[in-house]
Image: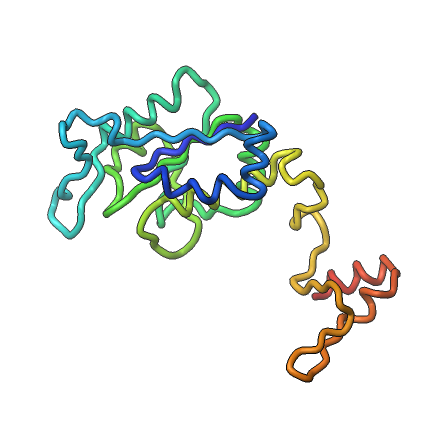
Length: 212
């Protein structure tokens, strides 16, 4: 079983996503497990404050290192082979090959989700975490990127999708797909499904898909 350890200030954001569809089934079938660690639970401040103004000035607030490190310590425990991901817009580009590699090598994956202006960089240095980005843009927090990584890695784990042929990158897949009816009539116009897909000629169908 692969366990995702997610460090986040807002674990409730994940509820609707992980309790539905494929991910919910993967959890139910014990293919994956998801654990959350809130840095607020590891702060010494009586008000549970975990952010401070950045050194050198500038807008926004920065998450303090110690609460995040304590949350990471809890996630790591005595585990030896763990991948620690530090989400950052400037990190390594996340893609399917990276997701597949994670699914094959690691049974424990720690994902550190930032907020505000980010997390004190010393966290990354101390934990020897790898900076990872899901794309060339900036979001308000690391929760959405965490969900993307969780989903992309989970679907690479045997048994999560049920049918391994469902992994698009492992087969010839076209961006264009069709289903019944053969002729769709919409606002008086007819839209036909390609005849090749109805031919039953599997080799030609695969060629058609490969050319799309």
